[in-house]
Length: 245
Image (tube, rainbow, N blue to C red; front, side, top):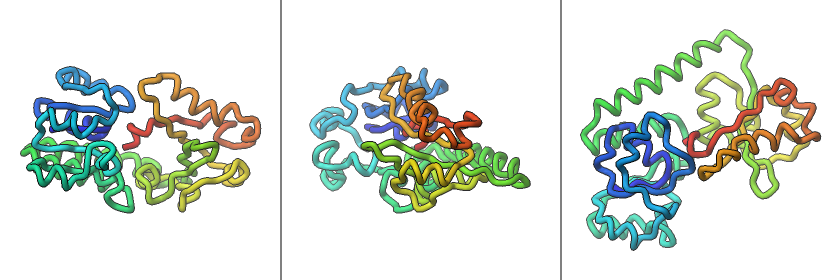
């Protein structure tokens, strides 16, 4: 297998399939601590998205990656690989389906469990996800719903993750109220009117440990937003894009 992007790599490691990986690339940040020993045995490529020619040299039977990475400028089109006897799988939440959900993540894990004959391990992981989700949802069901926003700064705009994003689905499944459910860009004035109880700021660190603090400080140190409850109560959190997926 060639695995490209954070969740492609970590899902295979979680399933105990590190010995099947001939090459990996595209980490936004270090793999989780529990996977580091297994990952140390993996051939990790320097290019974030290796070229088709690089992948051909690895002679894979299977490529696991994101929808957007299967294009002519990166890995190459899936039809090229399929016509040359290489199977492919795209993470559902990477753009294959319009609504990105926890259920799609679960289906990916179960599908890979079937493909690699590790269904017991896949079911174990899915059961852990379901158990944790239910625990959190049940712990807050008798409380007033907390409101939250997941935001990302893009080209000077404040982009919000709506109900059809994976982050938005996570928030709702865990029992909170997601504000601005349609998603899209909002102004600072809109953010002040929404006044969420908490804010999650998405960032990509590419192994820059300072990015997490910088993401939080972008909101916390903005004097124009000082009236926000999330700032007053210090409930501004950072979340790496790769961790969300």
